[in-house]
Image 1 (tube, rainbow, N blue to C red):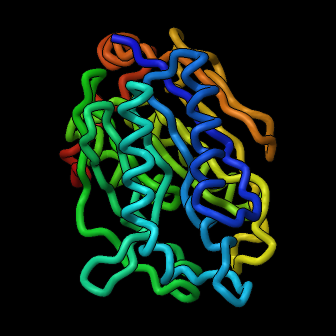
Image 2 (cartoon, rainbow, N blue to C red):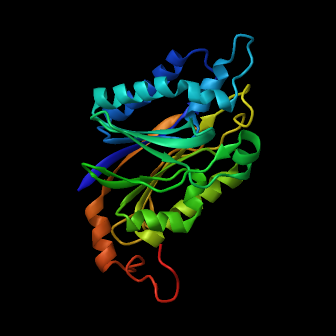
Length: 284
């Protein structure tokens, strides 16, 4: 079983309408379609771009205004997933649930279904500046190309949640991210490699690039897409199948061979998933 994935280094830039956002999104999807991608990953907080539209007085919208775009966001990506017959992990969008703001990843299926995974681990800045709440549980998603999970940015830095996703059957972890400097970027990047080695899974990672000069906490972005593998003989030695150019507006594409994962789990140079010492430490 193989699946072709594209990861978008989404360029944040000031816009004046939802239609501009939709046109930019479709540009990337059309580009991925030219490479026959079956899954397309957008980054975390991509819809903060909508905050730059501003209000009637020309002031940027606040994070609390983003849920007002949820219906239009879901309609757009549902239409595009159907139109292009592709699975779209449409980054994250802030929704409101029970008076709580949730930074929520959305998976749009080609048949119109929508899967949702709120971010489970919330950074101090998200709590302090945006009053963001945490999701309550992990969902893995069944697709016609296998089982996947979507863990957002800070989530990938916690080995327990990725181990849980693997135990629930996920072979591919999609990680939409948004980091504003090199320190944050490398925290997410290095731990993505660790999770791929520990659990013998693929990690598909991407982040925002560009800037939103009028939107607080989105003025700086440092991003790069990468398609990350375990470090074993069938895979590239550095565990990188493909990666973009840092901070460029682009996409990267690669094929993920699930059979290679199953092979290294059984007969690899190391078998980290099978060799867990659950007699010494708790399992997921």
